[in-house]
Length: 208
Image (tube, rainbow, N blue to C red; front, top):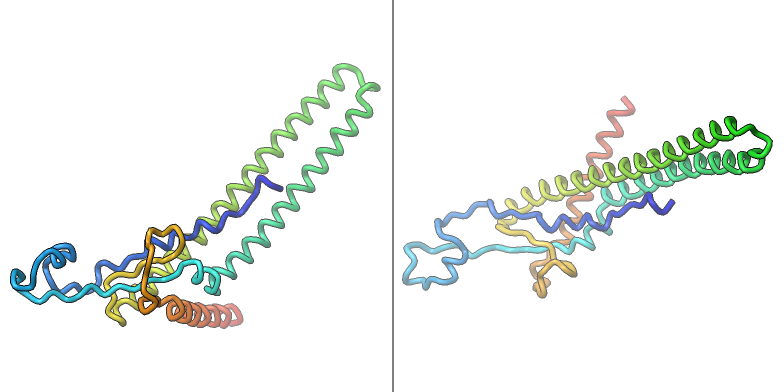
């Protein structure tokens, strides 16, 4: 069913993950630091420590995201099958009406036709509800993904003294970034380790 589609590539909203608030010891801004000579500054401002993540690579290799995409695809196919069955049922009723309409009285035909119109409208509303349901699931995954990555990076940034973590991918606005600033693989490993531990804990709780 074409109307019910899953658009998960917009999860590149990870691009807004920032860690500006981590441990600046100076009182000036980065811009002020860059535009002021060392002799004009009353203190030695620390250099801005920056890293970046390739969000495309992260999404391809983050187990949590891949699991959620798989779950959503299963649900999408199930809802699509339910809609298809209902649509075929209505199609069969319409075909039957077209075959038998001539043998009905005018009032009977009008009543059946009105009933079919109502069923068609209900089917359309059902289709819309399925689409909204999937959109809510997508938004939930987006929010969970953002929270997990952002929370992990807050701790990661503190441990590694990063003041800013950006995303570097096509269309992100960053035209060049040195490979030495790339922390993608390290972050993926950390996220997957954390996700695996949480999954084991959840599984043990369920078994109890």
